[in-house]
Amino acid sequence: MKFAVVGTGVIGSGWITRILAHGHEVVATDPSEGAYERMLKQVKQNWPYAEQLGLAEGASLDKLSFTANLEEAVKDADHIQENVPEIESIKDQVLTEIDAYAKPDAMIGSSTSGIMPSELQQNLKHPERLVVAHPFHPVYILPLVEVVPGKQTNEATTVKAEEIYESIGMDVLHVRHEIEGHIADRLMEALWREALHIVNDGVATTEEVDKAFTHAAGLRYAQYGPFMTFHLAGGEGGMRHMLKQFGPALKKPWTKLIAPELTQTLYDDVVNGCEIASQGQSMSELDQKRNEFLVKVKKLAEAYWPGDTASMKKVTK
Ligand SMILES: NC(=O)c1ccc[n+]([C@@H]2O[C@H](COP(=O)([O-])OP(=O)(O)OC[C@H]3O[C@@H](n4cnc5c(N)ncnc54)[C@H](O)[C@@H]3O)[C@@H](O)[C@H]2O)c1
View 1: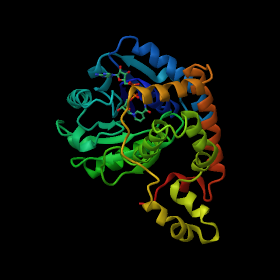
View 2: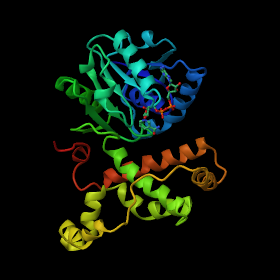
View 3: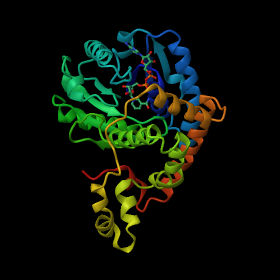
View 4: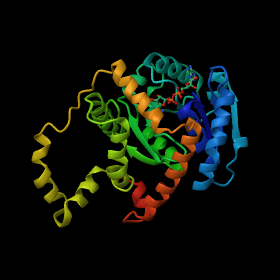
């Protein structure tokens, strides 16, 4: 199976690492100056974490090639993963070119965080072969991919795409109805908006908000999502008791949910807060610490899952 990765920034280089770690060939493409060197440096930095999670037979960095020419990159690929900036005009132009150059039966997955697949496929000659396949950073460690078919995607494409992502070690979450932001980012956006309000209202600093999350809910969320977490928070009565006790609070103004204005003050508070919290460490040092942490947490979450690990990966449809 031949993969092409279009756009080799944060997410593209993550996909490249994951695909190589599963033993496949990848042709990467990105027209920006210095893209090849940046991508190679990033993939080499990612590789030890892919190794810790286990490499497939034949996995090798030698199976990576690069060209700045999009046509050359995609023409022989069976699966093309698009990761260009989240700007609709750029996505539209690049996807139209991919569609024109790729084999008619090649699959296209878009990593878009928020654009709906029906929008992305509307100008394609072969719209039926496109799905949104939204991963999470760092792609080579975090297993979830949200697969979202558009109105013109055919079912066989979706099934095939899901098999391809499973074959590179991902846990597929099939999203039944396309919505902006898909599922996981919709949840994260709600949390992010509340966090910005709390800082904007002067209730807490960025450091305090981060602590409120990481020292409590964050620790639990690596094991269970909001539903199982609240089921356990209900004691013997589980979710039934939980809903009875805290259901009425949902009507109280605990949340604001409409985004605050991103004023210069809020911008400065948030940026300065993160820089202080980084304690002088570079982004690459922080990245490495985050990766070491995630590899351990991922293994721990698997060890404490109540069923076998296969049931952790599959979502009942
Ligand atoms: N960063 C995240 O956490 C994250 C998570 C999941 C999904 N995504 C999605 O992934 C996509 C890429 O995001 P990113 O964070 O990697 O952005 P990024 O800015 O790091 O990378 C984008 C890359 O696309 C390249 N590019 C620009 N025009 C191009 C073209 N015409 N052809 C090929 N490459 C081109 C740029 O040179 C750059 O290297 C976006 O759609 C984003 O929503 C991002």
